[in-house]
Length: 78
Image (cartoon, rainbow, N blue to C red; front, side, top):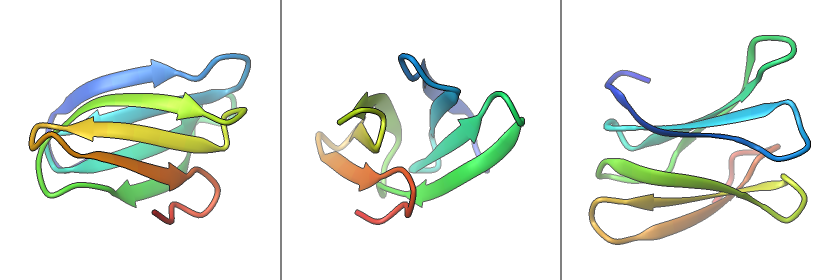
């Protein structure tokens, strides 16, 4: 992230950590390997919430501008 982290989630039953930031990005980290898995430019405003969905294959994030974005964790595509 290029700005402060505003939210995070340890995905249930996985080794994934999701972080959202003031810069409008969501990063998916592998906490076991300590590596960045996916970097998603999800929003044009501050990410305020992150959630994992569909067996930890998707990331759902909400932002300050009241939008919700759903992205694939593997590809980062919206």
